[in-house]
Image 1: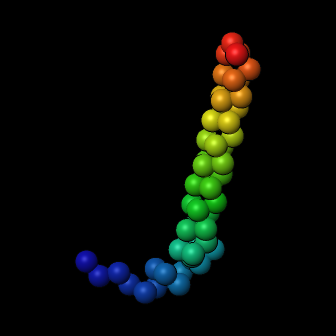
Image 2: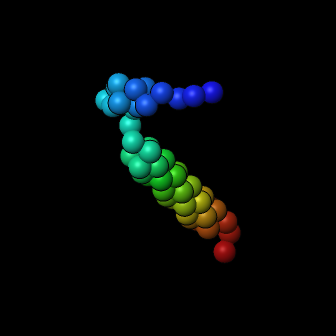
Image 3: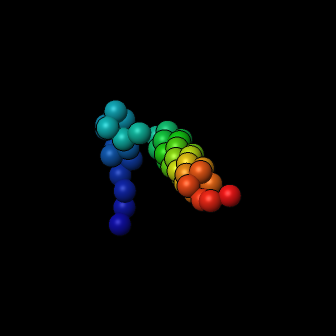
Amino acid sequence: MQVSPALHTASPQTIPPPELLLLVVLLLVVLLVLLLVVLLVLLLVVLEVEAPP
């Protein structure tokens, strides 16, 4: 299978560079981790408040 270089230079607008894609994926992963941490903290707070001392 030969990939012609014309495919890469034909439509640069529709194909984002790998760096941009990697940055978007990293941002999504960071947001997911932050969301999980916030949910865990909220769960711990609710359990601490509802648990009898």
